[in-house]
Length: 189
Image (cartoon, rainbow, N blue to C red):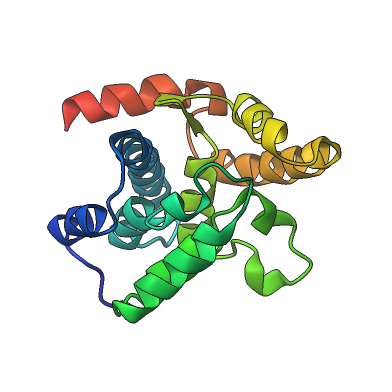
């Protein structure tokens, strides 16, 4: 990826206020951010070319327009967030936000699927957070299944599990160790 401009963390937090994000959403975003940055740093340590700063800022802004979907089983927030971030001058972050939905991984159009390491890490990290905890992909998707077509569950679960294997095949830990590893890493920061 080219080195496009990214906002500072302070600018990301200012966007939270501008968009009137509620505390529970900010808590979700902050934990997704910790997971994503942890994974990005570990992948970089393993020799994977990944822009950790881009992962950091994109994971902070992936749900910037989430309130659009509150109370509805819609995916409008990804498009709305991508448009907002593009207008702010952050095209790479815009693409990552656009591709973070559960359904993106199975899109018929490969341009809508997470492809770069940055896209994959933010996408996957979002699928490991639920109710301010780091959970398995299966546990995370069980909540998603309640609001969407349950017949689609296994298709998305298999696709995300494939991505999980791709990521963790590069790392010296297993998916079930992620929670403890991220918490320990965060305490050391």
